[in-house]
Image (cartoon, rainbow, N blue to C red; front, side, top):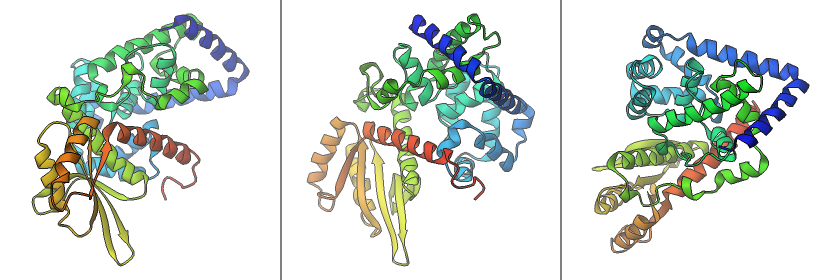
Length: 364
């Protein structure tokens, strides 16, 4: 990490605060209020939370700014996981006795619909002395400071990596304390990163792929656990993209007898019926199974398009295989999973910016 660059920005941050004392006061109050809210949820309270309380708990997260309809997201979490599982896993994540890395990995494995941004935000507000808030802005800020091998995508953020990066954020907080921000913790460091390290040239780098941060590329080369994380992240982001586009999107849907696909986008056209687009994500496994599954899905007359999602190498094999399959040849579309992740990131930014305008009341 470039400490001289960090110290230069800390001095600029001090000047900014000196000339904007009211904003600095509001930021401090907001940190305290959010910290108090999340710390107020004891293990016992989390284990007894109602559906409405779960919605309030999740809806307050900054990571939820990308969603206009927050109830849709929290209702989906409850549907996919069950309220009891969410209660137990949140209680264990926040107040468990195991090391943070193990609690992180357990939660990521057990709960659908909550990625590193949400998880780290909860941890950061409850344990601001040891847990950082990780999101795209943190990625941009730490990259600007010269921190290497940063996880660009969700599947790359393991519990062990989160602990390592929290140590990096603690170094930022330590420099802030040395400069006179005597009570600075990792949440203070997050506010500093947002205010100071989102420079224009660095923001432009956000959609590029520095070599040390590129996705895995050949997903057949990774271990089984990583393969499952990649598959599930891409599947879930396909659903998010469909929702961002205003479509009814769902994961793991049966579209024909013997054919359950990873994701569908669906649109009802007046009283004429439905149009469905089907997506299958391939990491490890049989290409024959993928081809057969997509071919079966075309038996549903509402299915207007089928898309295979994988890395470039496997997509080439899939296309060659499908070319000789009657009924699928000419109908199959292919989408590189890296592009899926990039599109999701771009749409996420667009939605967060539009929703920040508050054009539609959250209770609408």
